[in-house]
Image (cartoon, rainbow, N blue to C red):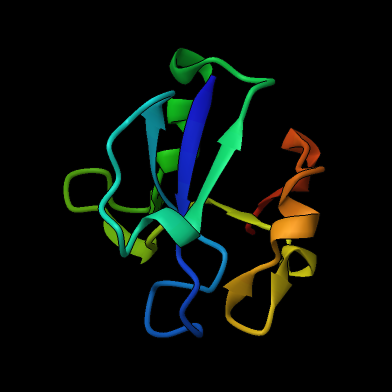
Length: 102
């Protein structure tokens, strides 16, 4: 199982609300301030989940890539109630609730 830390702040600069900030293995010791922003995903292994930490770069200049977005993946806005992850909706979280940003 994997655990995802989700950004719950309004979109700014290269970051968006719903971005997957980081992925950790099941049982990771999150801080008290991080715990409300964590989604446990039993349907995916940690090894397969780390891909969701990928940023998005401009590949035009491969020697000096430019960061376009902090993360390539985010969760659906429907899982939020304002800026808070909705605990009832999170209980039914599926990997298909992850969106690839373009």
